[in-house]
Image 1: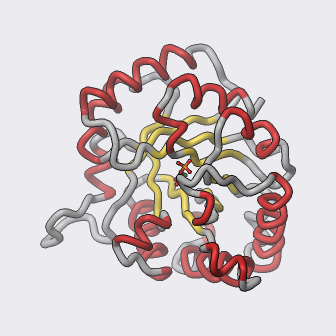
Image 2: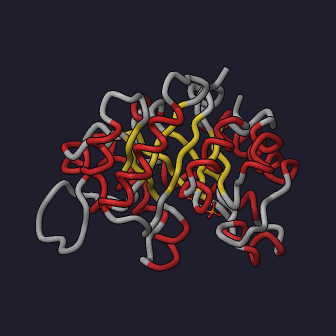
Length: 250
Ligand code: 13P
């Protein structure tokens, strides 16, 4: 049985004050509950403030983006080692917005996941097809290519620490969600691919769904056999909605 993981990607929202305030509400709303792993991803500048609030709460903090190197002449980048020091235990790699706006490559995603693991972060590797790719019948080809590249540099011990997030690009921030059946179909194909290529982790690795997840669709998505959690954008900025999604994982 894979334990549900519900992650909130706050993207480029909430400075230190507002992010800490949301973290307080979330911490208090979830106190005493243990039905899922819960992690939030504030913007990098808000990580220390959120980590201070969530320290000891059982809720995790992650960094949305890191460089593949720990330090050096990389103006504007974040370091996995420094994120760890600032209180993170999780990281995202390969979010479609990074691929789209920051030219992140399949191979780069693998290098970043490797760097994060070396620093003690659990990576959530994001993959997903565009609408054009879906219409062309290329969903499995694209998602499996992205996944293969991200996992290739990792050792067996590192592979066991990875989470995958399937986020169809056409469902992100659009209000358009994959139906539970559409999502399950892709998740099952990914699970099958893992069985073929990485049998040691195929039954234990968590595969999250992301893309317009909200309280009203969370239970039906999370009820699918190969959907092990959610990576939530917009709805994670509202405590009631985010808790409602966590409720859907019960
Ligand atoms: P939305 O939930 O806003 O569609 O965003 C999904 C996402 O990109 C999470 O990483």
